[in-house]
Length: 594
Image (cartoon, rainbow, N blue to C red; front, side, top):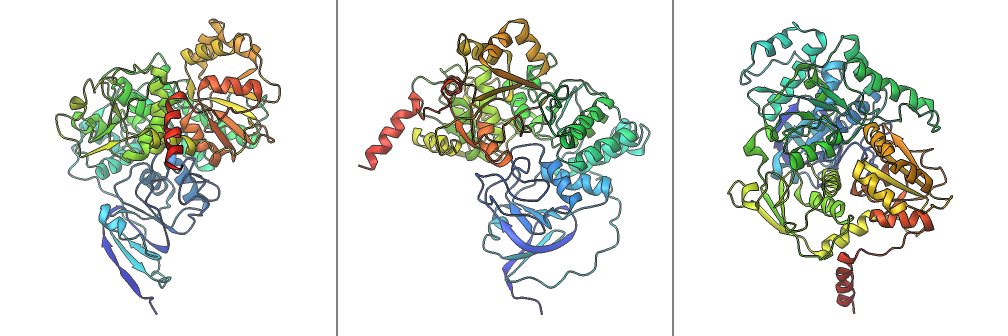
């Protein structure tokens, strides 16, 4: 007998067809699958998320959208192929990154799960539902486990290209296989995503940055090797993101061959497709960085946000695997941040005057702004006379991209498309205006500082990769000093940056202090033994890593400025001092409790 239906029976937009049912796992906070879900088990490991510790396996997962990393698509592919995926995905809004992971599983490996978006009201209606059934564009709620679904339907018919998408002769040639099997499959996937996004045509892009070279498990290597077997070759200049190991030194660093070998092989597979040896999560630091207005295809969340916001180049927040599909064809959906009107801010955020700032301000502000804006593009007002450096904007953008689903931000008077707030808003009134107080920032400061004791076992710098100017600043701070032997200090950076820093003498200064440099990979992929098994507390100046580290490596974090990180490397203790610009907020908080 069918259990009693709840009052919920909803129609939505079917993103990937199919039928499934199960216990509902619901949260009204977006979730990054990379750094947020363990790909081998399905556990939610984002320790800042309300679902932390839950397992998504076999349950219907309802979240507003993904957020953070572009590698979520790769994690979901792993989960689908290893049997730990959710039974279905229910979103509030159309979601690109996770949906793409399902499409890759379906198109290339014959496995799928249903995906649906319900809109704001429909999604909210699921909050108290216990069990749901998803059938294509319909969601039905139940008070108890529903009866079994009918036997699986016959294999799904081949998806037809929407007549609403105009194809050039070359686009059609890709689709017909005239340029090889890899490009044919790639174009089919591009067109599926273009249809979901609402694009009516494709555009040419000048370069690509590939994030799918991160090893998330066997599926990521299987995908790349399939493309190589099909003789895939990129058609535009293509750089590679950080991979999961230092390709030249992983054995020396003590990395387990069970990770080192397949991770290195994955990098080789993308090099075989014609990508450049770059291995950096900060491609904007390379000599190939794009220019204002250039149409590009970048994945890696911090790089996407930097390219759009700081450079003024044009890219969507491309999921892993869609990035290489576009690189193989040179064609991308003409939608989103590729278009001027879709780059405008709809949210205004005002911040107070806080006096003299240090470098910990910008990652903290980016982290907090990202939490507020969701998928909305914000314009931040109040920094017009602060003159943040490019390193400040890099740190802001990386933290913003961690907690937000938005592909870019504007800072009035700072970023190129926001000489004024009015220009960033396109002359329109903002849909929302929010004010951030010093007390709000103090709350996020405490959220990022998860360590419960003052000890510091390792200082972790370079997420995103350290720049040349950051190496110079760190060398100045470390000159003439020596860290404690019991405290590790590790900097990750790109090969090109390391070479420049060596030539300038910064590396010698830093190695005298006790810094270990690691290239090709970054902190989102590093674990033991680079982080000692005995280490319990880490320290970083990265808002991005302070968020991800508790879930990725199971360590608690002290978050602070670069100068504080150097001091702690010398003392083995975090000072717990608040930056000057936050002290008044703590004082005011104390007065309210008197």
